[in-house]
Length: 156
Image 1 (cartoon, rainbow, N blue to C red):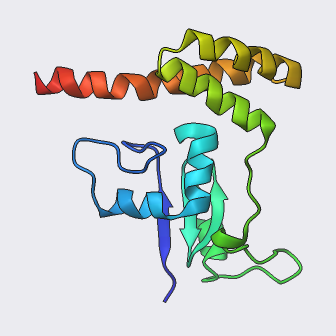
Image 2: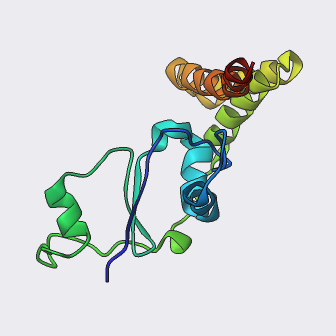
């Protein structure tokens, strides 16, 4: 039997256990290294991710029903039209120096560390990262940072 798992953005963060009451789906999310790499690198903007029988087959958008059928081999395309999915555990890492600097920028913002932000900002510029990518990393950090605050406001 084919197993299809969809990991989508609501209430998910890089640890996979965010939210007021973590559940088994979030624990499963955190237990898949390649999936965790996507979220660590891209934030929830890297979601949704579709995993079929342990293979990540789609990332960043929901596949159509027809695409999903083909991915699940319920109605398979001819061999010349497709290549087999690479098992999640065998996919090469996506972490590089650009992503390292984007993560460092986000972590600097989330931890209110101005002395940390400045050198990572300079390094990102030296590497040729776009202003848009740096702003996106900062905005993701701000959204992550505001989650505990919003939870406390709801609690109060």
